[in-house]
Image (cartoon, rainbow, N blue to C red; front, side, top):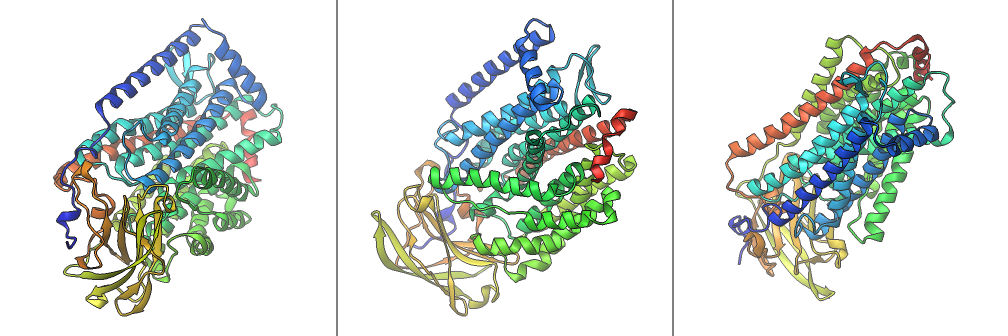
Length: 611
């Protein structure tokens, strides 16, 4: 039977449309009980009816030389963000290796994500609840005698935004199907809330440093490491949008990857250099490498899941450090913009050496013109915003309100414009692939074949495509960790052959992937039948000719094809409004802290920014 577009579409939504009702009830009840307990603890603390929370916070404050309302929440936040990071990367690997979940509670990684995100929210609320005295001049008034630090309010807001992604994600799956992709809008809420909460932690740290004043003991090596770790966290948090590229299953055009790397580097490394001084960008990058390396080791060799690589950011860090040696450092916004320009050019070229050496999909030369056109404006503006965030947490005066807000708005527009361009792709019309499969030795009882592929017409793609490869995924972790990638060898015009046997049985989904500039398309080779969503098997016959189709119809088989475009637009707009609200909250927090003039003693803390 020849594979056609109807055969790879979704015919039903029995399993791919959201969590089971009993799981939703159970999770809601558990969240409600935990929330009530935490509210009770907070109320008892505010009424001075318990002392253990104050004692624990005071002990943390003595250990970290910060006010109690900073030390304990930041410790909670650090543990929570690492927990969420581990769960997130493990979750992506499980989806790549096994496909969709049997249920929300059947995926062990979900527990780590949920605990981590809830911990971020609780850490922010703890910072809000702890102080009995006003925690600095920027504090937010809750009641007549209750003031909360700005960083705590923003952290709680980011955590709440991330947690909202869970119920909205279930609603999304019920309406649109269970899209197995990182870049689902509600998925971006969860990872975005966690990623941007690192900025809130930086706000809270600065408020604490201002509160202790210049007479406080100097930060020891341990606390200094924690500060570097914080900016490594900002770098990792801003990098989570790249994870599908890291695992070798990108579902969108390759030009996104350089832009995302440049943006993450410009934000985190510029902030680190301004706040922590000479060498901070490089140290933050090295700590991020160590943390990501530990998580990657736990996920792949230890848990036997698909391998993930990650950017090193060392080239970008070197660029930031070199630019900081110039007088530009005395003009932070300009420094951030110029550093962003260097990151998006020299930094990306240096990063490409690593990408091309180890990643599943290296960067071809054809990518550079469009990649630079997207990366440079984004990195320049994100670098400027990173500099303003660095100015906030070092007590330097921001530019005029109109300039600061204008830069944030321009940054959002630049990212939106670059993303809109990156999302544009085409599928060849009236083009097919003729595939001849030759049997290869079976592996663990599963069928493997080699492939000979001819494009019709032969010039359907250029001579220098981004990739022509075979991807096999969701094959179960017993076989090649559930993932298989083979870059086909070109042997003639429109004629390619596989370089290793590929899996075509069991639960594998194996497809021919073609990416050439704005062309992003695929042909199914073998797709396991999926009764849960009513999808028929697409068999791997000895010879077949199948049309090129939009790749997303194969990679995201669970998505419903019959949902009106207007409903999809409404769903995206709801997520966009929530996201803009979070960005507005972070911007408000930075402005509020900066607009509160430091006292003379506090101003003495500022020169460290120029070190």
